[in-house]
Length: 130
Image (cartoon, rainbow, N blue to C red; front, side, top):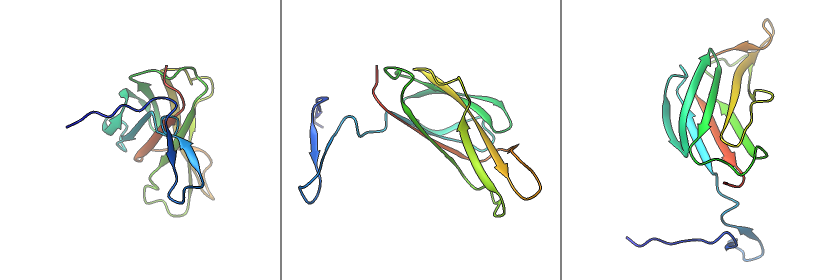
């Protein structure tokens, strides 16, 4: 095969030709799917490891660091079969660094408030690499 190198200033033109985006900045720089038990990474890109800090509590370690701690983290979880609850996953305050962050999974329903739980986790990181 042939390698294609894309410069940081490369632009992609939309299908209709009316919109453009910077190609490199528009790509996820890291992503992972974490197993429900939190003990294994099912698939990933630019993730060196995941730590299981307890039920619904984990951390991601990025292989090639971001340029700073000011990047975007998108987190979502599988519903885990809990149709009558609201699930949330959030970055743990004060843990976001250039090469890692921690997060927690919780659910809320009519009986319980902010209960940690284990379900599959989906994580994407966007921003500039170091």
